[in-house]
Length: 128
Image 1 (cartoon, one colour):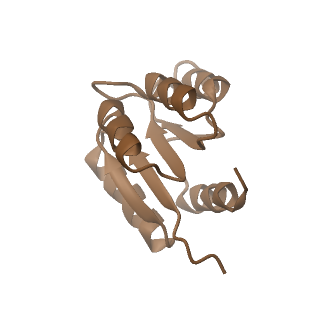
Image 2: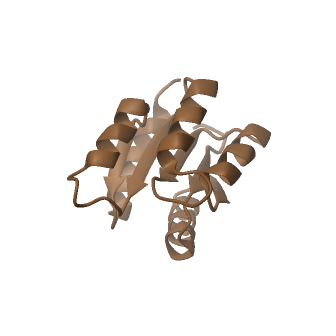
Image 3: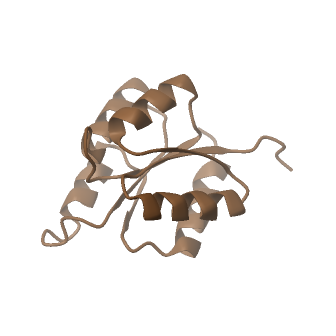
């Protein structure tokens, strides 16, 4: 059994969603760090890198698309899950773009917690 607890950084501007993701992931056995926007998230990642980043796409200060681009540029092997509740008028448009920039998986809000946990477990069990 792996004795190292995987660390996940959750970047989400909505307090309720951020707290819900944090509690669900911690209950799943992960160490979780949170940030309210992309700017704060990138700073936290630089200080203490995580094994996985889950980021919203629509946030103040630095949006998720810009956050994904910057993280993938500076840390090419980083695993990122993009989540979004916005832009539904463009079916999956922003989530598709996030994938093209390097997100390994995407979820449209509202997120199915069990499905997200399965994807997280799968991604964190893969070697980099």
